[in-house]
Image (cartoon, rainbow, N blue to C red):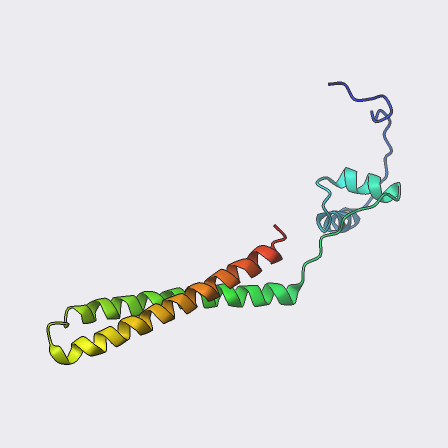
Amino acid sequence: MCKESSTMRTLTVKIRVSQQEKESLKKFQQKTTEKSLSNYLRKQGLQKPITVLYRNESADDFLREMISLKKQLSGIGNNFNQAVHKLHTLDHIPEFRNWIIEQQALQQQVIAAIEQIRNRIHQLYEQWLQK
């Protein structure tokens, strides 16, 4: 496909900047949705709209803590499952039989709560990633 003649760019405009200025321009460009520095500078120079990405750092901190909590909850759930599984080996002893049944009910509640928390953390993660 051939571009229309009105959108073909055949002229160049050159400017000189220092290394520090170029790095500064690159940092500004990286905070936008523009993929290249030239597109960013072109839009900036022609006063066209530029979409700036915004990151809420306090939300990022919260997200890191929630991901850590999610890992801890998974570990707790796994440990709890292993403990209940080991108790099943003792179900031939009558005193443990009732206690094991109670622990199974508690296990299901804990697993359900952990799964709800994990799902909510995942939802928050998706929102912050702006997907």
